[in-house]
Image (cartoon, rainbow, N blue to C red; front, side, top):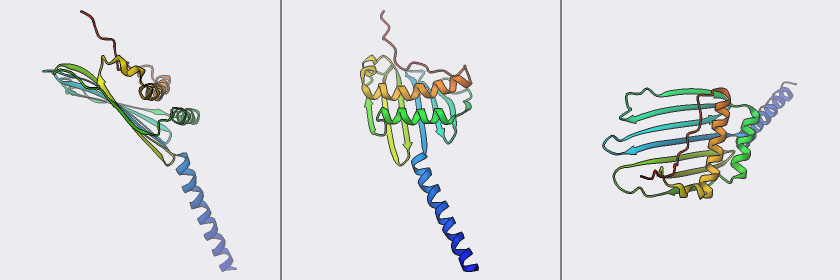
Length: 180
């Protein structure tokens, strides 16, 4: 009787472990987005916004360096609903973002404004790493499929956060050059 009970307990233990391992591997969603806006000049400065999705939460953090170094970093946390989580999974899959790819445009001169997008994705056992950078006036990058697909996921994260806090909104990274 004790042997039967012990064998039953061991079987249940192994089934529970196998289910939790197989369920978490296919279910896992982890996103880290870093958006940097900066200026290279005698007053070099930058602002980096990091958005991290883990489990059922979104962590938004904004830090400053350079001339605004005295500004304290900002931090907010948001809830991620099961529906929003599923929508993010679908956007990542349908936009084929589980790749390693980059777009790096050169920056001319010593005085310029720049942007950088860095996205690390984990969906189940698949991973993706995307890096895009260049001058803030590089409107041609908006035509690149990698940029368009990456921005869809970034804007969706901002939509989710903005629904909980109206002060958090997406700032366009690329602007038309100013004519003089």
